[in-house]
Length: 353
Image (cartoon, rainbow, N blue to C red; front, side):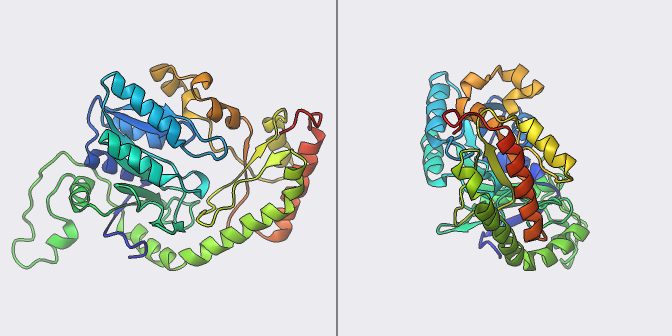
């Protein structure tokens, strides 16, 4: 009801939701699914659950999001080798929304599905509607650090009744009748049929109860995150003008799950993070690209040269503290310590960018 999606199916994690969505759209052994390398491993690992193969695509460089031109190029190469591209999975990284119109058209041309990894994107709404409801299916996360949380949990949204029916069946052991429906029905409520080897992916009732309360606060929590993000933009602007960092793009539909800055080339990211830590300021990196992880690297042999824009960004990313209760004086201290750290490590003006 919140997003307007005709079908919203609660699950016990976004990972489970991605698995169910890709199974429902027809990913089968030997199929290929295109995903970014700059994401959490869950985006890709669910493809392997189904016996599919992953093809990594590059980011735009201007943003940290999947580049439609690179996706189109990789689809063409895969099809030339006789590979079926069964799905494209764009990731709305940090809460910024991907170029869905272009990606949807690429998916349509190759006969594949568009499954949005919207784990970071709730409740991001643009002119076309909510991110996570604009592809064949979209998957949200309600993990502890998300805008709304059930502790662990997720949601799959789709406008396709057949996909919803398949997800609903596979979500609970492949049983053809929902438990809630069975026990509200007069008559043989005990009767059901197992029609597929399904999974145990339903959301627990206690988590759902928490989620219903959290949902009422979603707009308020998003607005608090936006205020924090906008204030960071003000107090870090000098560092961007000096060429020491690049700030994230402040778009109208950004969900601000993360606030990711890019350090200038030559500034040692590990030293900056260590200095922030010494000052008791938490920060993180989102993400180490998957193609640099042992499993993915060994399986596919993808190198930095294959994903040059991902590689160029990867060693420069720092996620700063961002949460609804963050106070302006705390943000000012983050900016002060970050500014002092990067200025100490600046390169000559001609080398910074």
